[in-house]
Image (cartoon, rainbow, N blue to C red; front, side, top):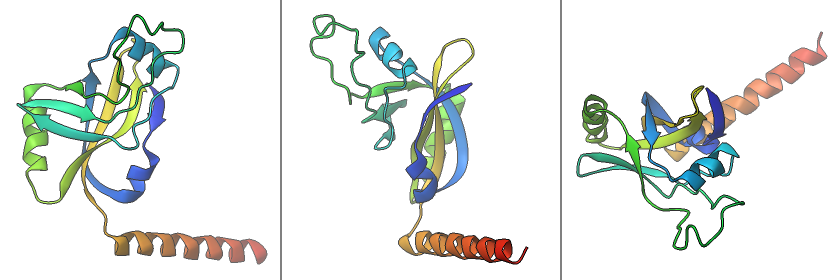
Amino acid sequence: MKVVTKNKRAYFDYEFSADYTAGIVLAWHEVKSIKTSHVNISDTIISIQNWELFILWMDVPLYSKTSPNLAPHYQPKQKRKLLVNKKELSRIAAQLDKPWMTAVALEVLITDRGFIKIKIWIGRLKKKIEKKQILKERSQEKEMRKEAKLFR
């Protein structure tokens, strides 16, 4: 599978517990736009409405070679349906019912057969203190590696 785009900020902001892969319902010009890597998932929200999974605020701009007459009222950040089976949907719903749990879109993938999939992770938002601790540990490790390099 080829990764089209990643939500790198989510790796820093969330602590993840489970992951799922879902298909997505798209129009033909949206597929072409995504396959040319014109997609942004940094602000997305995944929600369950009427026992269906939706991704909100996924930015897919109109394909550059598409005439505006073919898609006159196109909205790049419209609500799009995600395709998962009922068993996975019930698992996702059960995990989202727990306090402080959210669903985040991490990656947009293209399969070998050309299908577009979205990798969804369920997790909780990290606190500011936890983020500061991670940054502090990273800087300490970086300094230790730098000092070890000097003594070689």
